[in-house]
Image 1: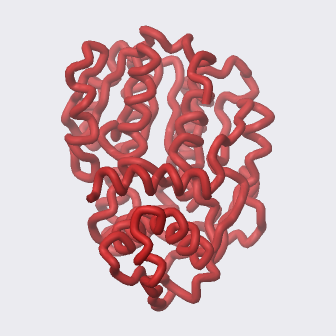
Image 2: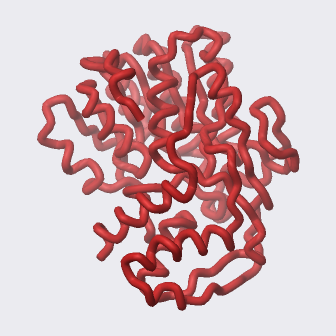
Amino acid sequence: MNLEQFSILKDKRILVTGGAGFIGSNLCEVLLKLDAKVTCLDNLSTGYYHNIQPFLGNSNFTFIEGDIRDLDTCQKACANQYFILHQAALGSVPRSIEDPITTNDVNVSGFLNMLVAARDAGVKRFIYAASSSTYGDSEALPKLEDVIGKPISPYAITKYVNELYANIFHTTYGLDTIGLRYFNVFGRRQDPNGAYAAVIPLFVKQFMDHESPLINGDGSYSRDFTYIDNVIQMNLLAITTENQAALNQIFNTAVGDKTDLLQLTEILKKHLTTFDPSISKVEIKFGPNRKGDIPHSLASVEKAKKLLKYEPTHAIDAGIEEAVEWYWSNLK
């Protein structure tokens, strides 16, 4: 990714909510490389202080420890901001099934607080993390932005409501927004620990510990696994685009390729065995399918290519290779 095309962001005041999290901290890092003035808002519930610690000595970086469920906090964070990259959310379908109330409080009430604060602060553009879960029970492949089904988890409902609210805030208040439907993002800084860890960091850690990863189902379920650098590119394109037709739209943020879970384990083994050949002998376990899981997910990225000039730089193999190198250096 050529960062020179985003040099317009120099000295721009940009708020990244959830900036201590996996995606948010990567966004903060690249924005600081572009000499933007970055404010990070995070309550450190799923983000980590160590993710932003390297930025604290940078005079262009400000950290606000606070919660998007508090409107006053949102208003203070949004004051004088030019752009907002809203990443703060409570992720995980299983977590939302176990605790739908908290998921709704953060993802809907918190999102609404941020929209109100952005509107009141006169923010130029509000970019937010949407989700592929919005496609729900639609079996159509590839996923096209305008064709969705019914949500099949509380999490999916909250992310769909985000899109509805964003649209209303444009039509009613004139706030320009862009929603990025993330498809199974992975990469450096993604947490492998905890009950709701995403599949790739979880499997990487288990392989490194010579533990057998558990696949839910028979391994045939597939996903459009999307490396973090592709997500960073989409966010940068969204805040810098001069194409008016791209504003107040939803875009799939993915690669446009699907990998099933059995294929995923083979790719992980291939790259991990360069560090530890014995990992090739670790067996896979299988369990029941999870509630709320869709069988297959594959994005069309043609709309993003057309309106935002998006060109994904990392297919899954290249992304896994870089991610594994990061995990090996940071988990060992």
